[in-house]
Structure formats: C-alpha cells, structure tokens
Length: 221
Image (cartoon, rainbow, N blue to C red; front, top):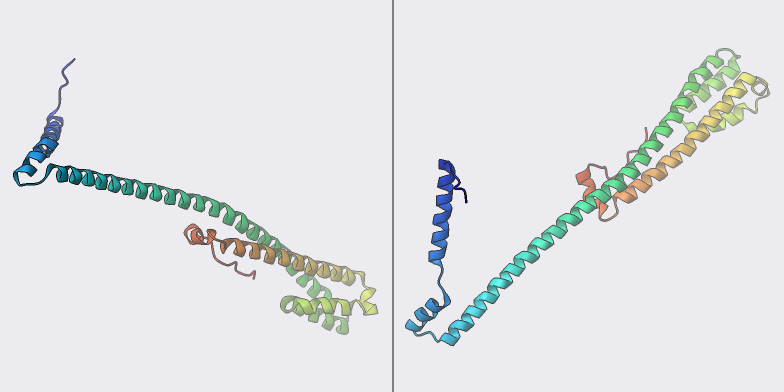
C-alpha cells in the first residue's frame, strides 16, 4: 500500500481523532470488570445482571422514542409541504378566476363610460325638453345605474325620441351595457364567493397567510 502523505493540518486532525478514540476506549468497562467491582462492594451478580438488562432496555426505549420523534417530525414536514403545494394550487386557481371576472367587469364598465359623453353630445342637438331628459339620464348613468334603466324605458315611450334613430340606437347600447354589467357583476360575485369558500376551507386556511393570499375579495370599484 502506497504511503499517503499528510499536510500539518491533516496530521493534527488525525491525531485529535486518535486521542478521542483512545479516551472513549479507556472510558469503557467490560461486563467482567463490572461484576468484579460489584462483588467487591457486596452486590449480588444476579441483581447486577438484572440491572444491566433494565439499563439496556431503557437505552433501547430512548432510542425508539428518538426514532419516533424523528419520524413524526418528518411526517409533519411532509404534510406541511404537501398542504402548501395543494393550497397554492387551489388558491391560485380560485384567485385567477376572480382576477379574470374583475377584469371583464371593469371592461364592460369602461365601455359604458364611453356612452356618457356621446349621450351628452347628443343632448346638445335636441330641443330643451329632450335635452333635460337626456342630461338626467347621463347623471343617472354616473350615480344610479338602476334608475338609468328606468329612465331609458321612459324615454323610449316619448314619440319624439322614439322616432330619432340616433337616440334610440344609443338607448339600445346603454341598455345592453347595463345588462352586460349586471351579468359580469354576478359572475364576479360568484367567483369571489368561491374563492372565499376555498380560502376558508381546512387545511387551506392554515397555509393561506403564508402564501400571501387575502382572506376576502375586495369589491369592485
């Protein structure tokens, strides 16, 4: 066998390890020596052997407890990681649907907002009575959409307005935009409810704060 050369640091490490092993070996007592020492102080050999058996059993029990604790910790960590992965998937899917529905709702709301300037521009081209009605409708579109639908139906009962195809066409667009907003708002609310139910379900509710997801969905503006 070829002799291996060590540098000073490696040599010191080898020496320290050899000293440690020597000390461990010197500190051990074999069974024969233990029986002899016990006999010198009047301990019955049978009692000594029983004591050795009990000490060995206790040592094995402690080793088993350590093993059980390590296994339990490993299982806990594994379950924790699996819950994080499962929760991330469930929350991400539910939150993505909320974001999609919110974007669609905002899109139809923005389309509706473009109708108001057109309505105000059209109001400048009609008589005073019609102008007041269209301006009232424009104000309702900004502040009270439910009232706006009622006003649209009332305006369409006016023969003068019903015969103006530009106004009728705009009324149809307003009605359609309000219907689309109502549909998209309902879809958003349903998606928000599904997300909140998912976020509150065990064990997802334990992982949610760690993953940075909110408990509830903020309502659309």
